[in-house]
Length: 122
Length: 107
Image 1 (cartoon, rainbow over the protein chains, first blue to last red):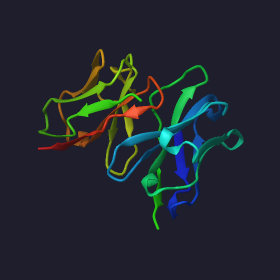
Image 2 (tube, one colour):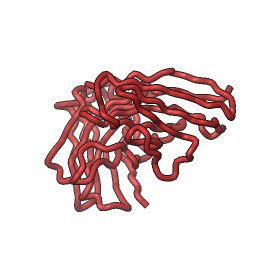
Image 3 (tube, chains in turn blue, cyan):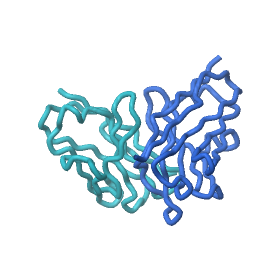
Image 4 (cartoon, rainbow over the protein chains, first blue to last red):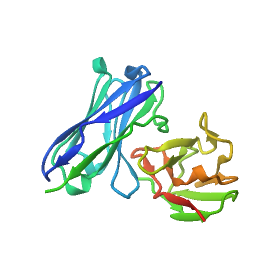
C-alpha cells in the first residue's frame, strides 16, 4: 500500500543544520509532487514546502525561505528537506505528504508519513 | 495569505450528539477545502475534500458543506472513536493554510 516514512530528526543547536528524508513506497513516486508540513508541540498544522513531480517547481512558506531546501531523488524514491540556520521556533514534528500528479496543481493530502521530530535547543 | 478562521477551538459533546465545526476563509477558495482528523501522536487523516466529498473509507456520519466562504463540518452521531482534533485546510492557493483546529472530547 501507499506509504511514507520520515527520518533524520533530532536535537540540534540554534544555527545548526539537519537533513530530513521521506521514503516513499506503494506508488509511482516520479509522478507525484510532494510536500513537507510541520506541527510545533501542542500547536496546529503548517505547510512548509512543495516540490513538483519533476523537481522543477519548488515553493516554500515565507518563514523558511532561504533556510530550507526541498529536493527529491527519484532513483531512490526519496524526498528530502535540508534545514539550515535553524531557530527554536522551527522545533516541530515534520511530516511529508503526497501531493498532486503531473496534471494537477494543489490537492488535499491523502497520504502522510508518521513524522520525524526536530528539536532546536541549546 | 488566505486566513482560515475555525471555530470553536474546543468542543465537548456526548456520544450520539450531532457535532458541527465551522471554518471561514478570508477570500474565495471555490470548494478547495479539506477537513482532517488528528488523534494524539498520529498524523492527520483526510476525511473530506472538495468541501463535501467523503474520502474513501471514511464513515458516512462525517459530512461537509459550503456556502461561499463559509464551510461546515458535521458529525451526525458522535462516537467515542471520534475524539480528536479536527482541522480545515484550503488548497486553492499557496501557501496552503489550515484553521487553528477544534479539539473535540466526550462530555
